[in-house]
Image 1 (spheres, rainbow, N blue to C red):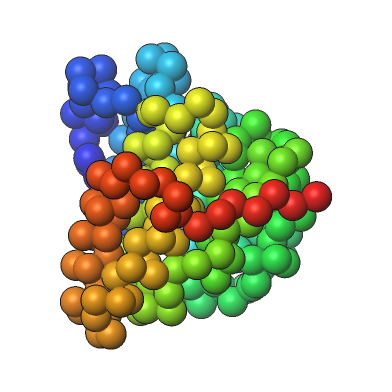
Image 2: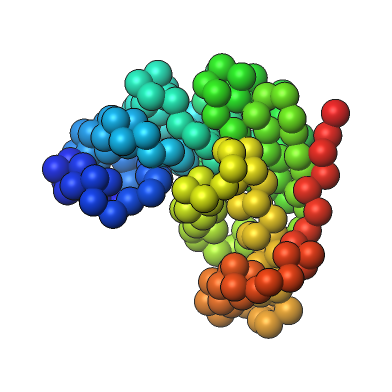
Length: 225
């Protein structure tokens, strides 16, 4: 979220364990900061996560995300089906930052993108898919209310980056990210039925999930062939 390239470099050098690059508020100033941040993270061997918001719909940020990936490949790429399709060079249809493509449709593109970049790719939607190009996992759960709250996908990017700092590998981080948000969405929906209060309940449920010692509560990640 930093807009100053020097501040981004200093933050990474002093107190960061991973970096999230979210292009939702893309601008030329932000682009300069993101380039500097990715370069610094690479020099420090810190993992970074790309959230390609509205890629495919808007050509400047689409080109920029391709530039970043070519500069230093991310550990995880998290996006909806349309964003992943577009980022991998496949035809995609989006309405603003929302996907109109099904997650299953994007699965071959996600595998191709993972193989091409070396990143774990997390496609999020009614069913989430996480793949490293070889292994692929599906996670179901969550709740429809998650689609009525702005920023849930962006929150997944942040959680993925946090998990990258502690997981054994990028695919494990992507799968766990999906499991936590799916669990939290289902739990939050038992506490409220309206989107305004759901946003707060979702944050509380994520906190409950992270603090609980009973990880059996998390939805199962189903391995696909």
